[in-house]
Length: 229
Length: 186
Image (cartoon, rainbow over all chains, first blue to last red; front, top):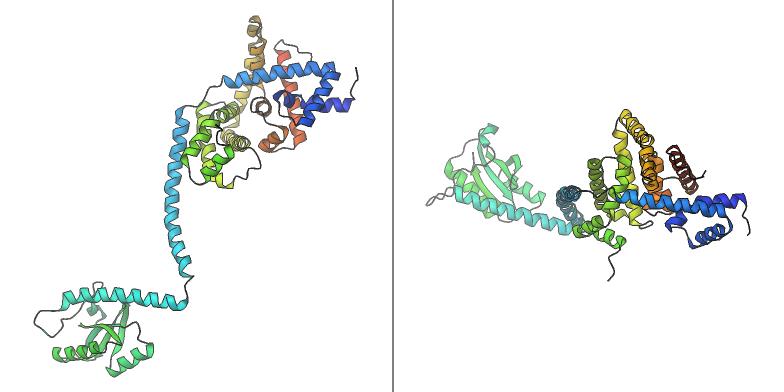
């Protein structure tokens, strides 16, 4: 019988547990097999390893299994994770929209914004109309914003709330205000409305109504206008 | 019919497939539980820990790169969780526990010998090993992990894996000898 050198023997000895478990590469398994045939001491030790292997499996198999609680706890954890990710998804949706908006050209975005503002203001105008138009009267009643009383500004004079047409340029608006001797004193308010002063004094209702009517006629500049306090 | 591979299950879990998660759990949870239980020696804690292990799988399935077997990945996560849980225990508790385990072995061999049950003594001695030695013996013999896989799970070089296994076996033989079973090695 051939013998193997001490270094090789030590290497093989270290590999015996894996050889017993069948987890060595084919090459190493062949090395061990050859050494076991040649070395009786190694072969005896391999028997001890197999004994340890068997009892380790026996020991582990008697440890039982976890109760259903483990699975329930896991599923509860996954549900909780789901709730979190749903929240994340709603946030991501906003990010998604923002990302998509960046893909549009500035001109497209501008038109989209104008259309959106127009829709909002139109809606505000309709609602305001429901409130301020008195049947049988040509004079619009004073308009109040829902958010605050314009009296709080505390100035004497005649005022109106005005919304400008989206296509009106800054120059158009400036000229329009000059023509009517009006000054912007507050705004923009919800719906893109501005409070303008028409006169430093309190005008008679008929005069105020006439000015407002003139302004309403300039539809290229004005979307909405109504007298206010 | 071939069962879905672990890797395919992980792929489905990454897309949020809860059924795939349940299949993977059913396939591996007992072994993972036993591995953890041998380390923490507390059934309730071991159950809690395996829930956490699989919850981590649910969270990180998308990052699994399949460079190792899924079972190896599971055991690596389980080991980390178990050791973290052990670190949270007071040291005195750990020392008392280790001492109790050794004492058990020392106190009972005669009784066991009377029964002529060498297997039982061997199992007692396996239980009395240090956590480090228990771990490597379980990984090699019960979980059938190769040298490379043990190195990955435990986070040590392959040569250290072989050396640690050798010393674990040597310690086991010493415990057996102390219990009256001389195997003639080392």
